Length: 137
Image (cartoon, rainbow, N blue to C red; front, side, top):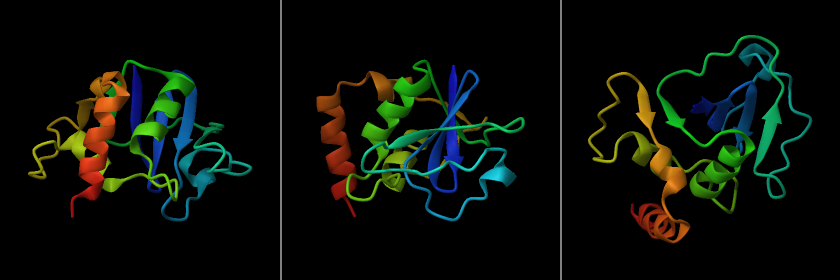
């Protein structure tokens, strides 16, 4: 089961022995301090995620999403579902929807949310949800 959290505003995917950074970081990130080798380059319009090289034990901080989909397939799916097209950043509105669908700012009690539905919902339906969420102010 893959665990997904955040790293400097981007999405951090931990799947088996692999780690992926999805989207642009929104703040400076000291990758070495976080336990990763600094990526050569994050080439966002071309590639919306990059594999990170782990240098020490990493603990994905809660709150986390868990998925049955794993690896690069999960990184690709999350980039399609949660990134803003024009800048490659994670949509905070879409991210919050995954943790708090009610909109009441209730954090998950144990810090873990099963979000497998996000990768299973048909893309046509997700497009409607996505457009609605991103249009709302």
